[in-house]
Image (cartoon, rainbow, N blue to C red; front, side):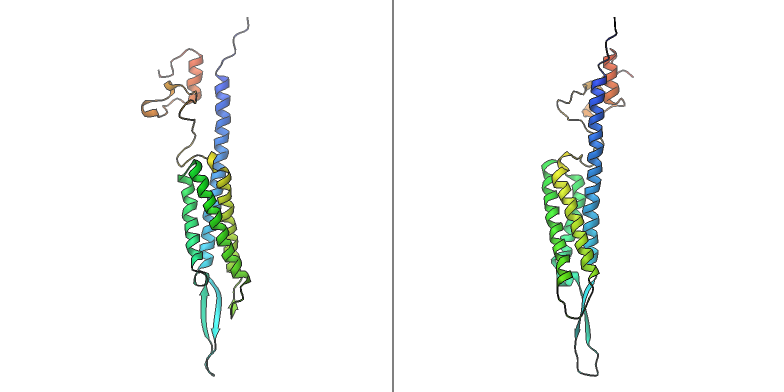
Length: 207
């Protein structure tokens, strides 16, 4: 008679698949946070640079007065939005579920607004000397932040929260209670080892 196939294989396979999804979710979370933080940081830095130098003529032989105008001076709301996006990128780590998706939508909108500010700096006709590369960097930063926010809005509900290395559902997950200690904390045995021990007729709580 052929020996019965151990049942521990199925829970192990399911957990392996769930673990793979968790790893993919953490990778996407990392990409989204990096896009938001890097994009917003780049836009904020570019907004503090000199975008234009206005020249005011004076009677000869006096030279014209040079008035340097930064992106923040021309568009005061621009660095404020970039700072909000920078803080929001970090907040993605601390949120989860629907709140994270709403935060992603907000970050996407902020990124679009920042990119629009950079685009304005590229096409605006300022009097005097103009530096186009700083508005261009602000535009790039806004696009990156918007991409990170969009990724969060579309995929963020599946990502783990900060500090969650690998999670199974708290209710109805099928994980044996013997694999957990007091307060729901996982003991030294991993869940897969507890399943295997139960299939062998052993008590997984006995070390």
